[in-house]
Length: 282
Image (cartoon, rainbow, N blue to C red):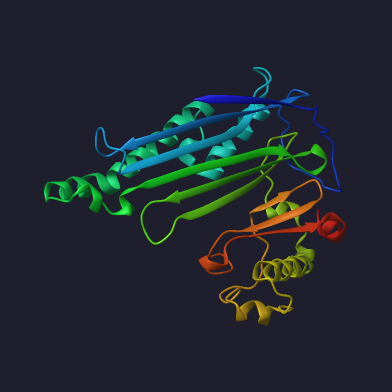
């Protein structure tokens, strides 16, 4: 398992951009924080000595390496990342144990799904050249951890790509924001004012129209009706998702496939600049 380190500059831990993060018990963190990344690439095979079928696993996991035994903030953030982005069962694990356990879970899922079927097919005379493509699985986890708004917020993104048979692979992304001073996850209700929801939605809608025109290489879409004509927002109104990042230059709202549009339309990453949205932040 490979590990790479990035020593991050000193964090500015004060209140930024008008935010008030209240009700938090202050944890202890070093003035500097070190971002560490664990990488693991594994391929397992259903047949000994054969390169197919196989399950390819690639994990790149970014986390905070505690600066000292008293750095409780980093430990809390790592636990929340593993719980919120991957599942409650991983929350208490160390980063190294998490990567190992996640890899083993992927392998177990692969064997559970296809091993018996494959062995039955081989027993019934299936030839190597006739092995269906769906016997080959792939899992890719890519993550990013970086300072966001005025370095008072940590931004985390986790992208989970999986091909486990079926018509196409699936990709799911999870965005998280952490108060750098306390390690607390910041939710949409804590960041965006209730009174500003309608205005925020209109700003997101404006960016969605721009992005859709860009994807479709046109400039003819100007309204919700135009979006609906290409399959977007047919089953839902625009809304503020929990998937957002308080970045350095604006707030990025992320919608996974199927959330506001069909699979064929892809995902949507929409950034609203702070000079447009800051009035509606708590």
